[in-house]
Image (cartoon, rainbow, N blue to C red; front, side, top):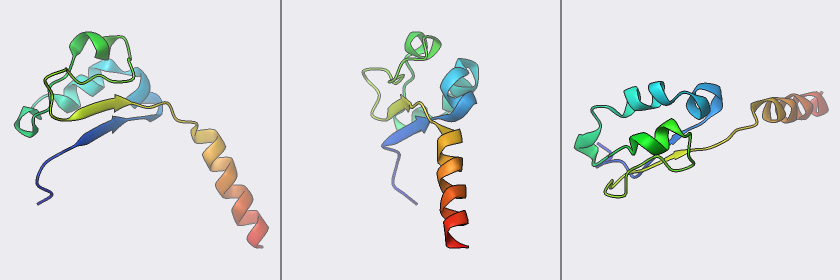
Length: 79
């Protein structure tokens, strides 16, 4: 329906730190042109897609606690 995949982003605790889970999710996505660089994935590199991948695969650090605090603060201001 979307016509393919351009970018896959892993974030959050598991997405940032679990190479096995990332590899498992990427397995079988070769039909989209996704090729994982297994070594970069093991190092938790910022980009873990292989150079011949047509899909960019990134690992992005998130700050979930700060985002939650911002949302709660905004909700409290509305009261």
